[in-house]
Length: 187
Image 1: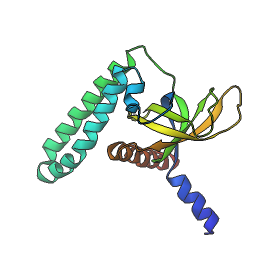
Image 2 (image 1 turned 180 degrees about the vertical axis):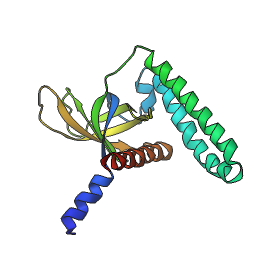
Image 3 (image 1 turned 30 degrees about the vertical axis):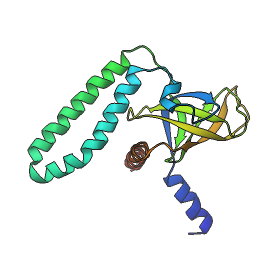
């Protein structure tokens, strides 16, 4: 395998095509506030985000529990799935839907479509909820590129600015999960 194809393969394995609800605000200084403070609260976003964080926290406990009492582990996992279904029904019924759009996601950043033109190196407060998992991320991001508009929409690439360890781990888990799902579909 040539260096070019290895590099291309490596890049592909760390990025996925996905769908998300994306919101952003242009900000002048990331030190002004937390990224969370730049958006009005949305209960469906908060609910799904908190549930994903709790799931992340419980993963290690579930693994240890499966070694000790597999039946109890299975019951708790089923209860967790039940809670996820209730939460999904709640978020679907809020009526405050932001349309899903195609994105490209990595642990370092995100690209998405938007109609707004940004000055080079613009700072954004970015909030997105991944459609497949319900995972919500709120962080600052820096615009690193913007393609010319096509049908009124520009492909905009951003790098995350200090999203925090937990959010990076959650994004990483989502990437691995979606990559495994894509590989299963191809078989």
